[in-house]
Amino acid sequence: MLRILVKKLSASRIRIIFAVLLVVFVKPTESRLLPRPRPPVDLLLLNAHVITMDPSQPEMQAIAVQGDRIAWVGSDSKARRLFASASRAIDLHGATVLPGLIDAHVHLVSLGQSLLRLNLKDVGDEAEAIARVKERVASAAPNEWILGWGWDEGRWASHYPTNRALSDVSPNNPVFLVGLHGFAAWANEKALQLAGITKETKDPENGKILRDEKSGEPTGILLNRAQTLVETHIPAMTLEQTKKAVELAARECVRNGLTSVHDARVSPIMLNAFRDLIREDRLPLRIYAILDGADRVLVNEWLAREPELDPRHRLTIRSFKLFADGALGSRGAALLQPYSDAPQLKGVITTPEAEVYQLTRRSLEKGFQVCTHAIGDAANRMTLDAYARALGEFPQARDPRLRIEHAQVLAPTEIPRFTKLGVIPSMQPTHATSDMTWAEKRVGPQRIKGAYAWRSLLATGVHLPLSSDFPGETLNPFYGIYAAVTRQDPSGNPAGGWYPEQRLTLNEALRGYTIEAAYAEFEEQAKGSIETGRLADFTVISRDINRLAAKEILSIHVLKTFIGGKLVYDADTER
Ligand SMILES: [Zn+2]
Image 1 (cartoon, rainbow, N blue to C red):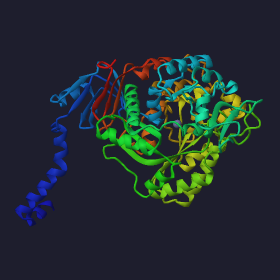
Image 2 (cartoon, rainbow, N blue to C red):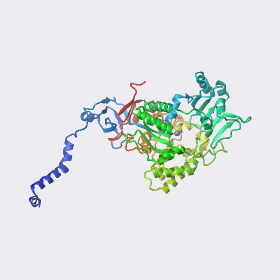
Image 3 (cartoon, helix red, strand yellow):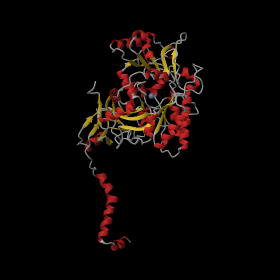
Image 4 (cartoon, rainbow, N blue to C red):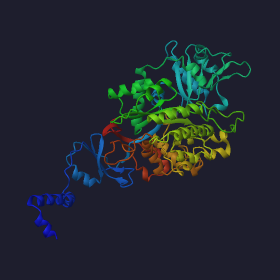
């Protein structure tokens, strides 16, 4: 049969068929026998313990980088054989390499400002705060604003200070000190005066001016939106100041091993600062900018155009931030039932459902994502309702990945809705361990079971990106990972962990800071794991996190940070 066929074919035809057979059958064998010629690589990381987050080869020893991408991942001996001609090789002496860590909810400019402003984060009481202000006033120019931040309005809520001592140490310079979570501020007499806040001033919508019970005079504590009465009188940051703040913050990020951040409320000036810094090569960090969804001009401008997807993955703009309520500590979080420790209060919805729905609906049509801050169970329910309506009316939305930031207190009925709607809860492990001393007082023993409920959510199949929400919390991601796996404070309290049934495994926590955070910004094909073709972003750490007791996770140091194959932080050369 074959012979007859061959006879019928001309010699040239046979040659073509033979060539085809050669390609089909012989080529693969040949490439298995001979090493494929490899293009020269720019960077080779050797003698490392690489945690890839790629289930097909979870732990490896070497990585080859070409340009800003990973060209190869494998064993040390093979790497030395294949890439002998690499232009640069770094022996990591057994250090552990993680995919570049991603913090999925941060405030870069606030971190930068906090580095520039008076830091009250570790003050124990009012007297200590006053002493720091006094010191700052001594070196301030006449009329210069003394701006500070970081006193814990959650912890101080039962005994807020007044402006008296603050006005005594600073009679002429206005003082404005924002709380750690941004939901309360403490102002002196001069600042209240400049803002025109008197006994007669009415509380603004969604805000409260605390007043002396007897005299009715403002005490100096401004809750929620009442802070804006003073804020509008503080000279705005210039573009140069904003750039300085972002640059300082980005440097802190890479020192802490972060390679990407999701900035959770970006204003036009911040966007300009990011663009300028990238152009001037002063911003190593990758930024996922979540635009301020309350800025109507900004929203309309962006919804009139397309999302901005950067082919170099430096700055991505495709998302809006809304606030459904306030915070739990200052009782601004919107609850379905009254606060357990303040039966007359239920918190406040700060963006009505109709607005959340409208922005979501418009965003879905234009391919934008919406991320809504929701802390209380009422705010979470309302946001899920608004999302459900928008998704229902626009079912053709491709891969919307709507997010709820914090998803902190959830009614049992809401927990399965995240997976059902494909909504991403974007959560902060250290919020649980910072709030655990008072959170149950606010919501009582029943509702607390649905609070900071990472495990309950994960059990329904959600994507669970993790983050710090810095500067309210430390930006050190290993504190977040530690809090996620222990539900304990850094001193190990409480023993066994706070509601330990909600703890995460180490792998789930690492996923939260890598693959899942990448997913929350639509970047899981480019970031979050160490695989051929992904961006060459790495966090090199001092200890093997897979083989540490939980407590020791806190002692991990970042040795090197690589972004796009570039060494952007090196502990050996920087103090
Ligand atoms: Zn935030």
